[in-house]
Length: 143
Length: 387
Image 1 (cartoon, rainbow over the protein chains, first blue to last red):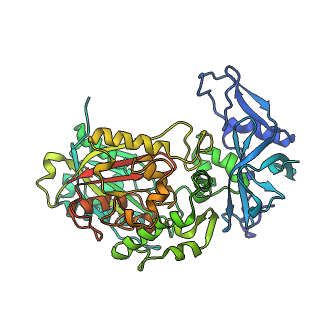
Image 2: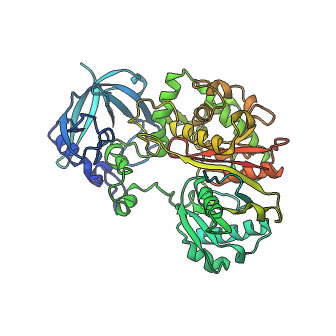
Image 3: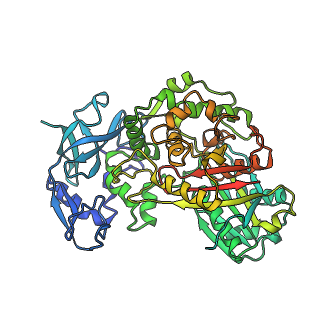
């Protein structure tokens, strides 16, 4: 899964556009180490997914990055049949995984065909080193 | 408590007509359309002292002033979505900041680059907005388009309420029937059948091509003035009974994935409650509505959120199509909706005005009040117009 495009103006993989929302930097640094960490309020323990600068439950600005199980179930998914970007060959699926911690992450399935996907399917996180600069987390059928 | 109820009216409307390639600048489309809406109202550009532009439009109000000959403004604002710019205009009029406000939206979304479609351009212009969630957490996995983003919620709705494509498909079928009779609608010269819908290409499973409203080129303009002035103009006024927005906990643009349930539209429920409170009427008083059919499966969800049926019964409401046709329980999108005229906010208000005036191509007899709602799957907005 590498970026392709016309020779004059290569179109980078969307993951290489860079971390834009700076609250998420620790998340992607952990993924680089093949770890899944999410932001949690240090005061009341509310998960802050997606990351944010303040806890909406207790209004504390103190947060911590905490390792999570990487185990969950498929909560929803979509399958693209028309490619929106040259880095993605169709058909491909995007899953919304609900982790055991009760929070949801967007990702891709690995080794699960689109017609095998179903809501409630147990999945585990896996990490893919795309190249030196890019590591992504994905989900495969739970062992 | 102060209220906007019946303080303002829509007195002039126009579109340039829509196409997939206008061959013109957005500036020229906007200027022509604003002049046409003022002509419709029987007003002159000199009468305008307020402008609200939709943020998709790059043409600043000052350039509109230069082209259309509007000398002085006491109110000029940017806004977005279908009826939120109307709310800006209505509140400016109700508060006495302006007498006559034009809301316009002009965009070459089909032939040009659709607003919001270029993530990398957005990256350069935006900082740490929550929208960046898309770029950090969705884009790396190829979740790159509005239909993909909302598809996650659509699948939850279909799953939780055991809704079939054969039920949802009646929304595009009825919209196509209405579009076929509306000369303004550039899509669906002839109605589609449920079989056409079922057989149509799946773009992003669970959405078919016929579920999704196509982008178009074109402009709309809507003229709002004080209620007491509205009665002396060229057209029967459409009084604004209520106009509001609704946003709710853990909301995102089409990707509210963090809320406990994704199969409903809580912001649309909030919007409906507020519209009914201000207007002093309820869903049982409404027999024609313009709902957001940018993605057809969101229509049954809106019917539930806006109180036209119970939770989980929206698809059954749509099945067979009769409830959604003219003369049915709730005539839906009598212009053909965004599925028929193309995805351009503002056309939903304009069709509601046609119903109030009695000039719709699919006229509901004695249409006293019309509900308009858009922003399904994100910040919701809407209004109730009356004769």
